[in-house]
Length: 219
Image (cartoon, rainbow, N blue to C red; front, side):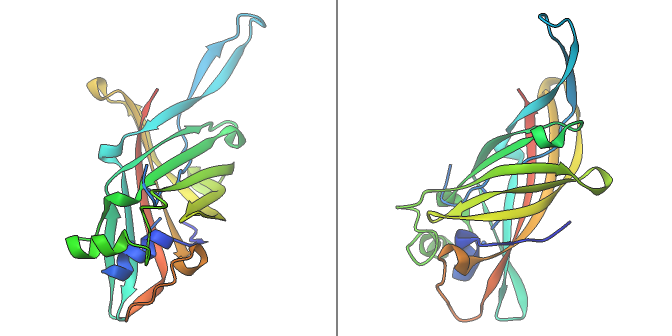
């Protein structure tokens, strides 16, 4: 899984207070994932075409975690509890795939109410002014071993930067009452200062690793 240098203005901030990689909140981004293609018949041409499957992100089963070095002795972990979005993956034509993910920065959870309030402040996510972080894919291509190479725009605290990462397709299938589902994961490394999160509490790392695990329901 290729790591990339994104700026998790909010994410790094989260850990700093106590972190990326996303999740309608200040810190959000959308990712693209691969899904099974379905056959559709074109009435006009009378030909069969393959249509990419579209998925809605299942917020209750999607995780956006972040970790950042603390005091140089360990990694501190946090998460965003509200993540929404959608993605379309065309395995036969990856370039037709798209990913859109939003993260509610207000939902930051570092296991400390006081620290979470600080993370929402102007020192970090500044959620009053920038309630949502977003990711929008600009290109998707096929990678090794069924993975996908994704490029797109990540916006945090009103700052947009191009990022890239490798999306690992985990699986898909009809799950009965749960509907047809698919899932993927990725990991990216960002520099928080690039997104304007330059607050420097003692012992807080500059790089933030975002771990994103998405589950989607086919629409």
